[in-house]
Image (cartoon, rainbow, N blue to C red; front, side):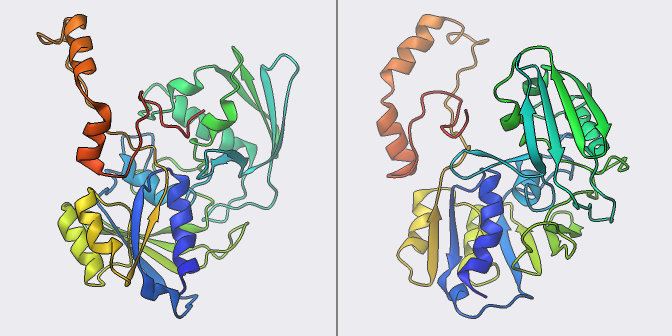
Length: 321
């Protein structure tokens, strides 16, 4: 295997903006094997496989841009680029978006991607019972129309310059799928292999993929409930990659080891010190202000993450618009 073969997997994870600091063995940079199986250690096993059903962040880590794709994708740098959308136009009043879909895209079951799939996928996110974190972001969508198989027209109740960005979080699911909590119906470069709950989830290369073919034949996410056990799995070669480390102390064992490569990048992960403002004395805004002013944020960050991380001053990551 080569490092580029591993990077092909990592780039998809970074697209989900979940990868902060990862470590991979440098030995992976030697022999390329197109039939390689890459084993990834993670602390975030999905609760289920449906990102609108409270599946947790693990489903995005494993499936985003790997198994499922959207009309747009969010790059590592926070840029929004077309994915399943071939082109789009905005009306003069900013209330109508017309999208043309990429041709010759198929789902893993062989069904062709059509506008009906896009319509049903958006409606999955905005449905009353949806648990999607993007549900409120799409509340300006008044209707989704499908004049033909390759055209989607979204009409808004108010202007939304962030619509393409928000649509990057809407996975396009085959509209014939009725339940994807334990299976999948995506268009991505990988398809679900096997999910052994509490243990591992495998993804297999989809040979009918419309875009650049995956470098590796298989990806296996191995799940850990303990960060130390995950680190030890990487040190002993039980896994090839871990998606994050939990502290600078645990990073040190990889950082100065020539057998490993540490990859640093931005993440939407936030560490937040919060008050329960329903309980005294935090129900008093003056108390909350006083404590907030008394805390040296820079020293707090240094004590937790050393030279890593950055102060963002809010709940909003720098990569968000």
